[in-house]
Image (cartoon, rainbow over all chains, first blue to last red; front, side, top):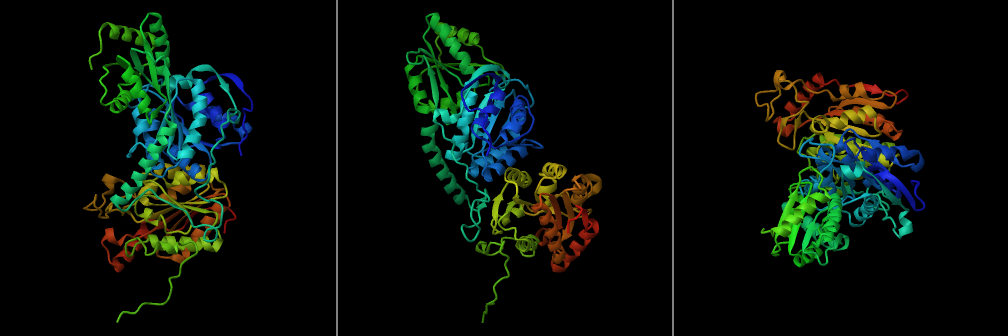
Length: 367
Length: 251
């Protein structure tokens, strides 16, 4: 049993990576498996520094392939285990993530996005959006929370563990290098004080009981002999996924009720959009924000309602429309015109969004 | 008239009788290795502490062979899954079972690093000098001159390098105070049993063990019984069968 460090509400001034380590401890995470890659390193630095107090476990693996698979091992052993990665590490961890999808392993991973493709930058991007939602040779049976600041990092890291263990789909907290490295005030709390009970983490391997007496041996596999056998399994997963989606979908609307120009953005870009909305409103332009918090599954119905109400839509991302592509598919049939502000691997500022929306007001979107 | 034998097969407690007929090809070495392993687990009474992991390739067919908690992983990834388990749940006797491809090619980084850290598990590499499941391609341990689907004119070491020596490699990097490293062969199952016994005892005691077992693949080798045996003997000349590293006091 790990020792929880935060027993009462504590206001701290931390980097996002530090916040994630504290959140994992608050969630009573027992083991972290990790491999160094910028910009997520301080998650494990903090986790390791706290080990004498938390009495949790840590293993620095040989690569992200191992980090992913050994995390799976820890979870199968019945521990609330997790990992964290970024960029090329996220790419090579897809092997393990896809096994977690197929075997319904409650895999938890914090992804601190950096620029891509390839090594690109170690700083910031939103270019792992599609990869984190749909990576691997599967169908994207994953849950992805996109955070927009340090309180989110704390709240959603705790939530990721419970979502994963409750629904048994791999769960990701998708943040980025800016959030990881930036320092902000944040309120750390004991989840119990907010009425949050951590889901139990039963062991799949070496469960209680004697084999052949109390229980049969467990044989876990991800290989199927027949195409139909596989499809039958995946059809069941899809039913579970759809049912779960309604329960986990989350979004945030900011002044979207009467918005004529609706900005759709996720993560830290959504935070820039909030400042832009206020500036635009001060200038008399009715702007609003729709921010999907779960970008997989997407909160489709509320997003469609918000888009329907608006006169124009602006998709903005630090990527070339990875979220927009996922949203547009869900918005099929609506006729609200849209424009885009995409900056690949570069932060989008409030000023960028204000300038773009002002041009949209002058010249209506026609797509 | 067809008569059936009334004698029940001699199954170890650690073997899963419910799995039915063997999934391996006739003459395959996996059955011999796994049965010997199961018997050793019985002898040491490790049934309740053991977790068995198998790789992709022919070894995956062992996913329900053992009457032990088992996980079938991805190609080359059995080692990290199993040390993930033993790190999280100390006291578990973790066994990572794989072929020469999974151990020495696609999963080589895990082989090297698990040995360097001397992780608490037993890694078994069944070395049959080719990729069986995918149709008999050259593997890191394919012998000089050996014909495979990707070396149809025989392995040319000038072009493809020399066969990898797993046990020698592992013995050179594993912690001598924690490790047991050996190479055995399916030509002598009694000896294999004693090797597994030391290897498992060491793991049960918190150590790291590595056992490479020279095995056979008559299907892809295209050999009859005699030819298979001859090939195995040739392998034993190429890959020395012995103990490479024995932690002091391990018997």
